[in-house]
Image (cartoon, rainbow, N blue to C red; front, side):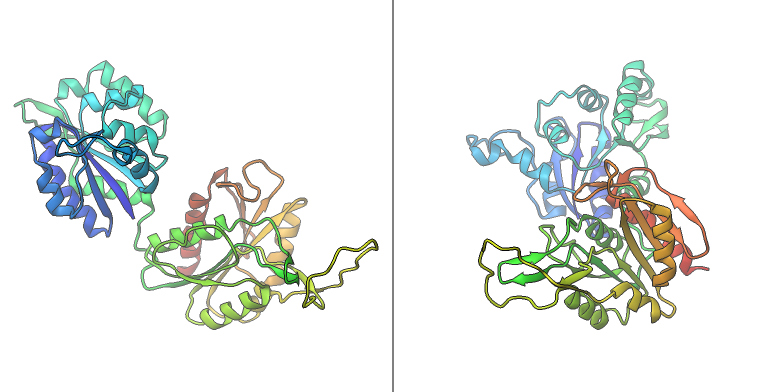
Length: 400
């Protein structure tokens, strides 16, 4: 995973070198961005040597003073789009004010406005600056926007005073980074098989039956499981999504192909999560040539496709089996019925007519139905957050 570490101009800037090493130990790809003031305390060369990457210090033009070009002018946008998290440590009172008021006058503050990745800020400053009403107001604004703050520690400060303002311990900052990114080790040594996306059933060489699934929920589950240490097998129907780095990707098109892939690759899986929206029917006799348009009605005869979830339920043994139910009415009745018929351990059900819970959205509103009768409704969350909630309950069931 890729993160940017923004280093600003405080005495604690030297501690950012140790922070880089700890982040790398978590297998994070770190690029450093420095403000001009930060370079008064530690050189860019130090971070370049630690990361093996260019250290960005200027908004326009190269760091050697060469003229600006198109690439350098939009570099903040390119970096903003490819990172998974922005961490600013140490963060001075000045940078907090810039962030709170949306002032973008250097690369770091412009990057902050341009990225949609999570942001973590670890302030460090004199105790009086930390306790000043202006700083308190700025922090309040940032928290209200969803910025994660790692509060400074108390102790002796560089100015000789005693109080809050010391940069938080490296371990505390790394712990927050891991928590925000969902990096855990609770699925280490486990194989998790996840199906995702739609399946397609050919009518003829140019037409097919499918559904509106984007695959986002299944891919979020794969991303979350990888971050938690699992060996992930992602059996996916056709999507435009990037495969989570570290996942073992198995592309398929038809429901039959998905069943074969699950059978072949799922024998070692301790957890199987069927998030794919498989086509329930397929043409009985697909045409080998394109069907030409005519003036008469065309009748298409369909037959059921294999019921992969039901087959897994009959032979799941000690594995945890999770199914999904996308409904438009009587959510609870249909989910409970599916849970019983498919012999699943959990059914994740959502009403796709709800705003924020339908197809191709980045959020979901689901209710988890368990075989012991328990039901847990979740509020509207990002699909990544929903994925982690599901995995939390899977682990909980494994301990029973």
